[in-house]
Image 1 (tube, helix red, strand yellow):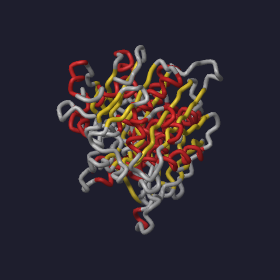
Image 2 (cartoon, helix red, strand yellow; image 1 turned 30 degrees about the vertical axis):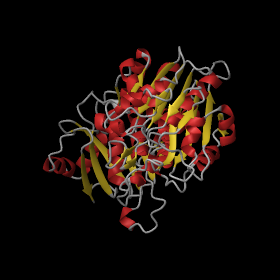
Image 3 (cartoon, rainbow, N blue to C red; image 1 turned 180 degrees about the vertical axis):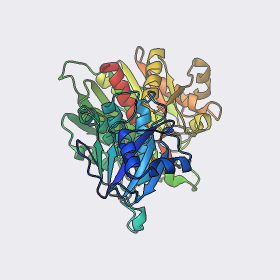
Image 4 (cartoon, helix red, strand yellow; image 1 turned 45 degrees about the vertical axis):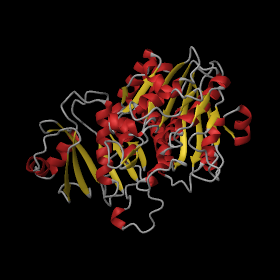
Length: 497
């Protein structure tokens, strides 16, 4: 989808978008359409009980007085009470209506939109962002789609947006690009996306200033990452640890913040194999790594004024004859020993070594990890919030605020010594599972044992958020891209606020 901001309006053959605030207060562009059509726009709105509520739409075909193919009257909500999230939602509604409608071009006429509540350039840039986010489609493997199901909308022109809309959208659009890249990664099947190909796909972006490094299994073995490598030993695919660094400070800042993502590109459960029904969904068990990668892409593309490192532990978890067994004991990079009770609790084994390596290598002030870690998180919070666990109140509060601002919402859950006894092992320093009770909390408590003294840490369990079986406000069903905007907003608020 190509989005541009223009000063002229060519309606010929386009899907024309005009606006109404609540109580049917039409924009100047909408009023012109209504006048030219002899009042048809207002009549249609009243017949549909349309009152200008946010995101509501009335569609008219072949309306008199315009050369447009169709006209969509879109509600902006109460006058003077608009906000960035609302206009992103409006853009997403437009994309949802038009992306597969047969229309190839749409003209969004914002001229004379009434008392928006925010600057028209910001409103337009946010609307364009919503269009871009919701207009994403992953159709490349569907070779026999009926014509009416194919994405048709390729060109969007926004009129009356003001001079600042384009530069604002350049920044917001870079973040949307990061979200789209995450969706690509999460959507790919495991025979296409595996540790080596994940790394090469990131390298192929060739984004100026984004440094890429990848540790292979020999390097990880030398570093002592036996917990991580225990997960990969049952797979024919070798593990990788992807390291991305963006420095927008020209070398003037140290690495204070490291993002770490769980990247299990397919999780069969290993020897503790999962039930067959639904196992195909486990291609997205790399959602944390996808989010970290997309966030690093966003930061680099928008040239964020911060120095950030993103690390992804990439592996498959497969039930080969060489695979790790329940009851095995592994020694992590930290030197702590782990009794593997359940090989399907593998993500924490990957993360613990990746987190320790990050601390040893960069000496960061804080670590934030993202992972599709526990099914228990879906039981706790459903598909509306990710869970955040932290050893630092200030870090947790800032992440929750970033979640509220970005739309990637978080809810804090506890960690504490009272949960430690659930993961104590009779033969090793710890077990990798703590039973059914408080499963998400004990998983976080496990990771906390690999955080060095004085390091701020937050663990974000995105198990219920990386994939959706139904459309959301800014995404279609499938990969959601959750986490990219959260991390970007966190960086913006901490380093660029």
